[in-house]
Image 1: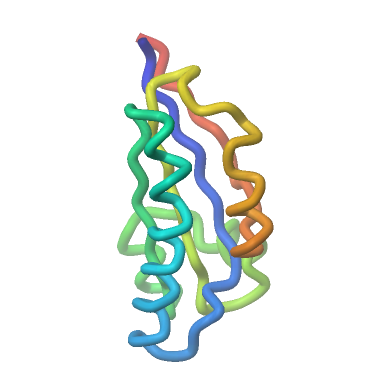
Image 2: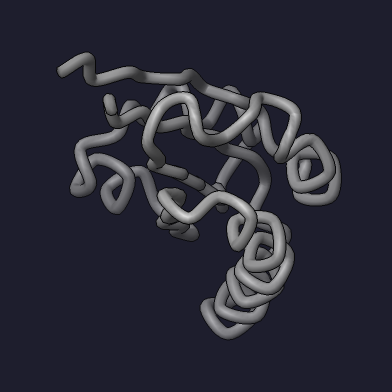
Length: 109
């Protein structure tokens, strides 16, 4: 099987690091039951308050800011064994967190 990942970005919806932590927990609790159906799927999410933080993680600042509208930015990566995760499995998460799909990447082995 090949590994694949999808990345999203959107507005964080938080003004402080504590609010960001709460927002990321909300995202985790939303993702948990969905990803439980897809054993290979794992996620990583971050809240960014500065362009320097985005650049330190080697992400494309302009792309994240365009998706989110402005700082702070919520970034989400889900990695899975292709084709384990259907494209429509996360539509509700995208809607609820105002996430915009940045891309899907496939590492063909």
